[in-house]
Image (tube, rainbow, N blue to C red; front, top):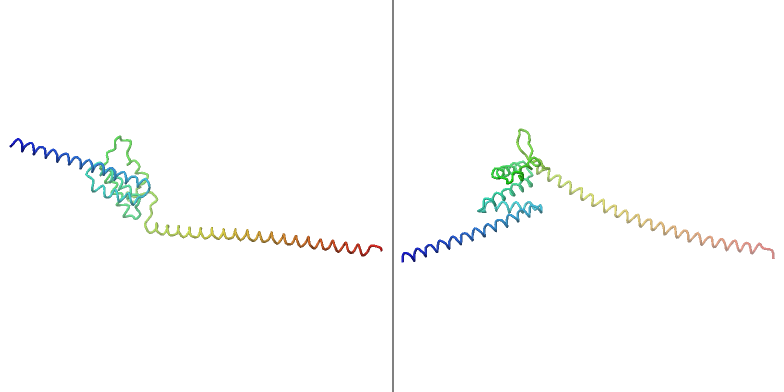
Length: 206
């Protein structure tokens, strides 16, 4: 009886381990698939979608490797989408938190070497984003100005097209008028020739 109970207990424990292993395997594959989706969105410049994927994955995955990669993607998308000084500071903090956990292998493949391209030193030595980021108010004003300019360009393009049509119509009308005048001139010349012929006939001696 004791042997049977021991075998049964051992069998249950083994079954539980197998089930746990399967769960971990499925979760591992699912997390990696989600990670791939995040980086695919990032490559397509769908930054908001990528940020949402990385934000959720970094807090839910059970894999430290996946978590580190998700934190990298999350920090990168936050850097790309930063507009206000507060957003910039928060994004830089996320980047610094990720870089403390990253150990490149091999050493010469380290994304941190790109920092000089997008992180600068402001007054007082404070780090800031040095890509073409502007304050949110200036960004919105610039966007509105760009839209107004585009509307003006579209209006001028339509006006130019209308002028070209009018020019063509005027040219056609002018050419038609010239043709009409030429026909009248030919008709008058024909009449004049007839008159001259009649004069010669009348003035000729009988």
